[in-house]
Image (cartoon, rainbow, N blue to C red; front, side, top):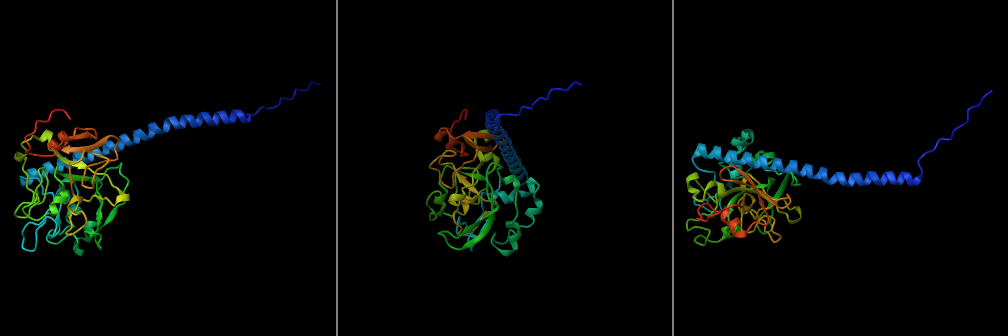
Length: 306
C-alpha cells in the first residue's frame, strides 16, 4: 500500500511580509501626490470656468445696459454719493445674477432696502457656487462686524472673486471728500474697471480689453477673519467695500499682502478674467509695475507679454 508523502505548507516570513508592506507604502507615496495634483488641476479648471462664466455675464450685462455694473452702490440720506457711510447697496455680484442663471436668487433681493433689512435675509443666505473657487476651503457664511470690532451687522455668504478697483488702496475710500481717490462729490473712484457708483463703458477701456484686468481671485483667510462676499456693501461694516472689490497694489500671493489684495490657493499665482472675457493665470512673480498697469483702464501703459 502506497502512502503519499505529506508536504508542509510554507507561509510568508515576517521579513517578507514587511518587505511587501514597505513596497506598497512606497507605491502609495508615489501615487498620492499624482492624485492630489490631478484633483488640484480639476479644481483649477473649475475655477477658470467660473471666471469665464462671470466674464460672459459681465459682457451680457454691458450689452443690456451699455455699461458694466458698479463695483458697489452707496449714497447718503440726501442721495449723495458716500463710499462707506451711505445706505448699503448692491454690488457687482448681485447685478449679474440674472446673467449667470441665478434669477431666482436675484428676485429675493429688494434693491430699495439696505442689505441688512430683514426683507433681504433670505437673499443673504443664498449660496452661489459660481462665485467660489473649489480650491478654497471655507465656511458658507461669515459675520460682518461694525467697523472697529462692533456688533454684528450682517451674516454674509462667502465668495472668492472680486472686482478690480485699480492699484489704489481701497482703505483710502474712507478719506474725506476731495482727498484722492475720493472725489469732491464723495464718490470713491479707482483707475480700474469697478469702483464706487462706477459706470464704465467698453469704450472707456482705452488700454485695450486684452490687457486690462476685470475680476480676480482672493483666498479665504479664516485665521485672519478675511472673508470675501458678493451681495454688496454694508454701511459701516468692517472692510465693507473691500468685500466686493480688490486692489492691485501688491502682486498675487505677496507674503506681505493686505486683505484687499488678490490671492489664491493655487500654486504660483492667481487667475484673472480680463475685460475681453478671457481668463489668464497671473504668476506671483510678475513684475509689479506690469501687474499694476494691467489693473488700470486708461493708464496709457504699453504692456507686452505677461
